[in-house]
Length: 397
Image (cartoon, rainbow, N blue to C red):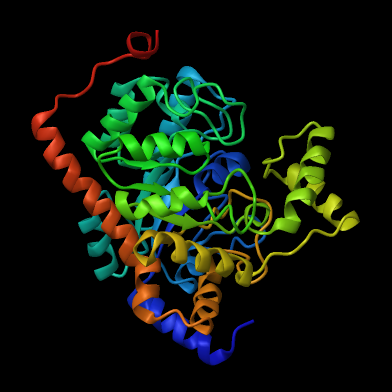
């Protein structure tokens, strides 16, 4: 653990330059645990027994803006995926309405700054997985009008127009319709999120995009060779694109020793008839029993700092951020156990010689800048380009 002096410096820095976290799955956890009954999981109360996230811990962690994931699993397809995404959006709006003294909905970079000035946590939304639009650009536009400000092009499975990192290649990146999705996201001002996608999809999207892209929760593949992480050539290309890669805290993505262990843990979950990402009480109990018999390799804030050191070196300080993936993973690093842990990471980076101006970019400025630049691109494009009415059948046959 960092010294008290470093932690004090970290907390002081976060008071001025709070964390913009790129990805938190609280809405899905609320769906899975209590079917959106916010009385049953009142995050104004201590929820440490059930969740990584509650209001007091967000404050303790120095969080100033949160992209809440309006995620739905890729087992939901078609109308079911769209409906579940709408339910997730409704959940985020309900949270903001229930806790107005702490959370404030934000749709623009100016909204983020205004929320911070008012002492509120800016609450933004990101859709996780292109299956949420069911191959419909009109649905994409509707999600944007409802407040969704990024979309991860895939989740763990391919979509018909883009390859996922964790599925068999089918499109070799983006199809023609996939390129049209990226262009339409640029036109409306929705950030293109490349976490979860295959490297070929990353490269295609950066080639096509006229606005900065993001990785909402991905780390460096050179540090931990997991397919969910970002190769160095893609990290290096962010300087030309203007995008931001937001390091995640998921142990199996950041700690090499955890990769093999995770394969065994996932196999055990499937043997019990459960999805490896199952965060219900049953799923957590199965995971806990496996961990008791097979102690897992433990990541720490130092593990995440190793990724950030590398990402800063390859991409540049203007192109790094933080995306913890809290409430979307059963395991978290020691020292980053929940959303209260960000000061431990900042203290570790201070100890490694990161300057306060550089840390201010990491925590706040880079994420705000990338959204502002996407908005600027959208203003120009929407003045000259009509909404796309292309279909996947027209472009991909």
